[in-house]
Amino acid sequence: MNPLYPAIAERAAHRCEYCRAPESIFNFPFEVEHIVPASHGGTGDPANLALACRACNLFKADRLHAVDDLTSEAVGVFDPRQQRWKEHFEVESESGRILGTTPIGRATVLALRMNSPLQVAARRQWMRLGLFP
Image 1 (cartoon, helix red, strand yellow):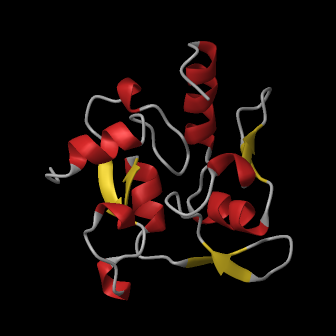
Image 2 (spheres, rainbow, N blue to C red):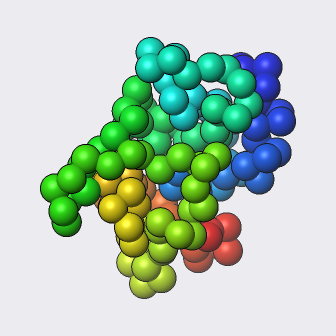
Image 3 (tube, rainbow, N blue to C red):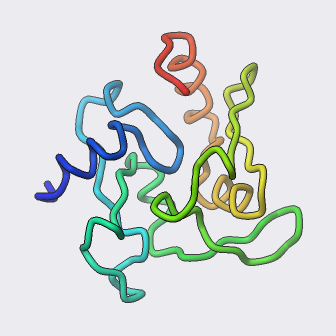
């Protein structure tokens, strides 16, 4: 486990900083991921680290950019240190889907596959339990 995990997890309120999944529902800690990957010059400084669920971390991989499906433009992937979640995303209360409200939000939702059938089914359960958003 990353030695910075306790501080990063506390800063993130034990939620994935991309899809907002609650860590408490999983049977293992979330991952500390590099917002700007080391392969792109990112450092291990806490300002470049985020708490991510396994799915978001796997699909983000070493991405810095993704394509907005509305404009077909490449934009930066959401950066939880530099941007506010509520300015780029909202949750559809009936379906449990995360909607991107900006080009960055839309591109990030698609790239990280935030609305896969399993993700949405889990999110709906979390909502019923009062664990999400």
